[in-house]
Amino acid sequence: MSLFFFGLVAVCGTYYVQTLRLTATVVLIGADVGLLITAILVVNNLRDIASDSRSGKRTLAVRLGASGTKLEFSLLLAGAYCGPLVFWIGGIFSVWVLLPFISAPLAWRLIRTIRRTPDGPRLNHTLASTAKLAFLFSLLLAIGIIA
Image (cartoon, rainbow, N blue to C red; front, side, top):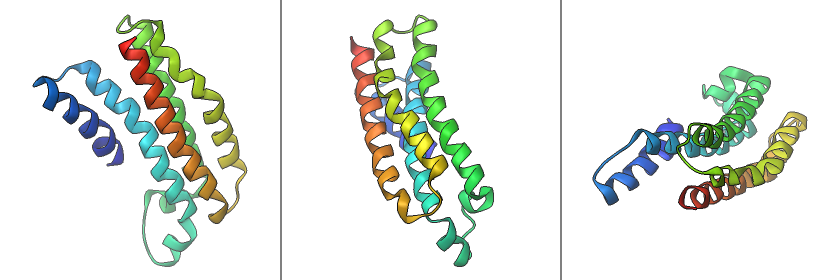
């Protein structure tokens, strides 16, 4: 749901209100941003697996377990970086759309960190860093689109 509301609805809704139209490219951009916003929530849910499980909450993270949730996080980050490649290879935007790759080292560090971090409280820094990654990636993507 977070991909839908925080990615597609937020980006597409904002674009539509300003232009009174919607394009497939805007939907793809919304999905791309939504992947990173979803990753923030995945870290949060990973951090809370133990407490959610004890209280009977059946979040996706509880159902997938720590290993599955860590894989989900990695796939979300990797998926986000596919977007700019598709935009560039497809000729939708210029090479500047690849600017988000400047943030790739941070994404790689986060993937490595989340794979090595065993328990919830230690994920607080990863949670904040994932939000920073989402901001940086989105800013660079926006600059690349308008360049």
